[in-house]
Length: 337
Image (tube, rainbow, N blue to C red):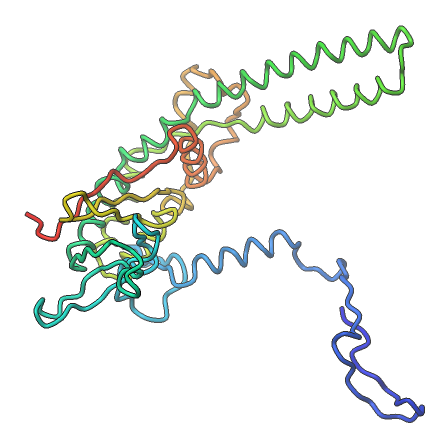
């Protein structure tokens, strides 16, 4: 709320309402007037900015995201980076000698020749190479399975082992502190240390309860969802760009090949935006008794979990292990066979 925005009387005490400068305003936050908390507001604003102009229409007619105001002309606008200088890759229509064919070229090379990347690739060829790479390396059940295998039960078991060792060590320290207190040795400092150890024990218990492997999703469900995204990838440039924005975590880096005849490119992928809203069933391997690292999971824990978020969590953990989960390097040549 804001006070002191206006002044009712002048310096002589006469009635003369005027506006005060903003420097005189008094602002105060009144939490009791909040409808939602600040954290949720920021999440919603971030989500709105992320989804604006990124919409797809599934075969059922359902829309996901906000429709763009205009049709997309350039598939890789803002999504392509030069591997030499880090600048953007833009579209330029070639001269009459090349038949006015739109081509991708490094922006910095074109603007001021500050980059040595003078390679020009026809837009149609480079777009097709990227779309094929997405289809072959990201929109496949094998890619999803690979992400899961990177950090599934083994990762959970490793973390549980580490936390269990730390918990056991803290238990010993608590016993030692308790014995020292019983002997009357510096009770004030020892009590503070005891409270510190007990707080860490509680934190470890919470962390151990929060460890969960990724539940399996029925192969048919995964294949159906990926088939939808593959269809959208080929439907139109606008829809294809939306798919790329959801699949890619950042930009695609294009590095000229040594022979100067094409690009090698790669880009980190993500999966949560492709599977958002899918509910995962209880993993069959838990029911079969293979519960190593999953003793904390109850039957009611898995049915309502969002599979996209779980898959993204596995991808993030897997990326830490193998540095990054990239698209396999695709190659686009100026004269493709």
